[in-house]
Every structure is written in structure tokens, then in C-alpha cells.
Image 1 (tube, rainbow, N blue to C red):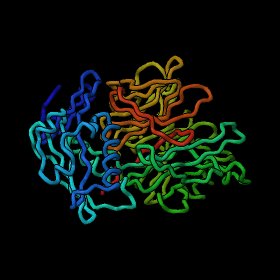
Image 2: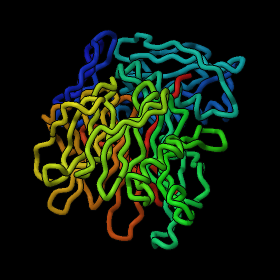
Image 3: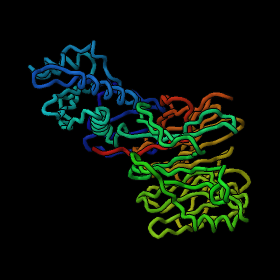
Length: 454
């Protein structure tokens, strides 16, 4: 058991290092993480009483921290001190050492404000004293914010609990009867809400950098014109009705002309640049797809690669200077990188198998991808120069990885066999920690929001 404090938090062998200032070491040995025991008491009111709001908040915080794989919450039945006794007499740190707690969280609720403290039991040092205003209509958000602050103070990484996931829900996989909807859900699988009505085929949603907008592709096969039957990228603001097209009808009609008058198809919705002003997307013309960049400020579509091969699934680097994408120009699907203006196109993947769906980490240090090799599917990571490739999970079908905002976790689509529902699974960079994201029915093609700040 380790008791190292005030040293750097490191993830051995994964190129992950944070500042040593005031950080707690989360130690990894050959991919195994030792969760830190943390005690979370209920928050007391001024009278010393505890209400259902306090119980709900504490439970959500516990679930959040447990779900990270870095913490292990201690069952309250083992507490020597109660929240009421702490409110009356203060904390006796020996009572928390006795139950092997590494950290302790306790606090009060007064005038719709939670004041909570995080204490390092080993040193008896107060790591956090913080306040959060209570909105009784959204207790879950309050709890996620508290969990994020605890997570950040211990790991020196941004928390990811106050986030959302948008995914595609498919009903009836018979092609003629298939329906799809965009769904939004809290990162822990709670509160699923439909964003679309299922009247058209929707695929590959993407979050904007501010977490307010979803880009996705929709098809209307029953439309009469080539423009109507084309795949359109739509932008939908979360919490609002209506949507708008990314590409104007004028731009789409010019693409249709180049396509010999036939409707335009697309395989992946665009990914945004960090500033949200540009997107990259793949557009199919005459049977092959090329990468385009669309600048929303001047409504300009720029072609970056040629249409003689299949170039698809592009993604900006965090600084916007480069684009990673999939191409079969060398005979099989591989991962390539180019500058954001289309120059210096070069392959970075070098292993066996077919690579696809690259996604650049928010930290910029890794690219995650899907891989198919000898009948197996994998999710892996590599450095932007192609070195350090590691496969972190595999299965009958695993695909469409998307990063958490802190760059430690990935959500992907998993299917365990023919005819089985696809599900969303969370894993960390070691691949040793996995968690099913509970969703109603089939779920695929996730996109993960940034962490919403309080």
C-alpha cells in the first residue's frame, strides 16, 4: 500500500505526466491502477439534520468517483464517525485512518450552498474547501461538479463527470424498417433523451468544442430531388428546437454537379477545430471520398485530398495545425496525417491489419483508432508520429472511439456477436478498466461532450 503525497501523478509507459505541484500520485504498474479509498459523508444542514438531497448528492459523487477506476468509496456502514458528529465535534482524523481511508469528504448545506472539504487523511491536510450553490432542479449537476473538483485536486487532471454523451440509437436492423435517433445521456448513463424523432436516418454525431452544438449527418431517401436525397450535415443546438444545414444548397448542388447529378453521400460527420470555426469532413464523389475543410466564417469549402482513393474520418489536432485521417491509398486502410491546408500528407500507422476512425486526444499526445486484424477488432492508441502503438481492448466488434475531455478515458461501440445489440463501453488508457454505459436499447457512434464548467 502506498502513501505517497505531493509528488507527480504519472501513468507509466503511456507518455502521461503532470505537474508535481500539490498533486497526489496515482500509481500504475504494468497497467494496473490501485484505487484510492475515499470516505464521503452526508452533508448536514445547520441543525445537524440530513435530508434526501444530501443523500442523493453523496450517492452520485460516490458513483462518479467509483466509476473512474481511480477511487474506491468506503461503505458508510463502516464509518466510526457520523456526519452529525463531525458537524458537532469536528473531525477526528484517527477515526478515518482506522478504516484505511486515504481521503475524506464532508460538509454542510446552508442557504442553498454546499460547503465541502476534502482532507488527506494520511497528512491531515485540507486539500479543498469549496462552495457550490444548490439548484434543486438539477441535483445531479451539482454532484458531478463536486466530484469533478475532487477528481482534479487528487489527480491534477480535469474531471469528466459533468459531461454528456450523444449517440445513435437504432431500432429494427432490417434495412427496410430500420429507424435511428440521436440520443443524449449523462456520462453515467442516466437521463436519456431523444434529440431526433426517428423519421430519417442519422449517423455519426459530433460535439462542438463548447458542448452546445451537435453536428450529424441525416438522409432522406424519400425525397424527389438529388439535393433532397443527398446526405446533409446538420447543426443542432442542445436544448433548442430546429436545426440548420452546415453546407448551403449552393455548395451541395455544385458537389452534385461534380457527381454527375447523383445525390451526395458522406460516411462521417465533420469534426470541429478547437475554436469551432472550421470543420473537416469526408465527401463521396463518383464512388471515392476525399477530405474537405469547411470554414464557417467565410462559408468556404476547400478540398484537401484527391478523389482517386478512399480518404475518410478526418480529425483536427487540438491546436488545429494538423489533420489525422484514414486512407486506403497504399492498398489497405491506414492512418495518415497532413497539415490543415492539405500539405505534407504521410502515413503514420505501420502495423499489420486495417486502421480506421482515428481520433486525436484533447491533450494532443495520443491518437486512438479502430483496427481490424485476422478477424478481430481492436481499439488502440498511438503517438502522433505512429510510434508506441498499443491495443487496449478487443472484441467481436469494437469501433468508433471517442475521448473524454481529460484525455484519460475513451468510450467506444461494442457488439458481442451477430444479432446482438451494440452498446457503449468506457475504458481507460490501460485497457484494464472497463465499464458499460447503460443505455435503453441499441447504442453506437458516441460523441463525448467537453466538461461543462460551473
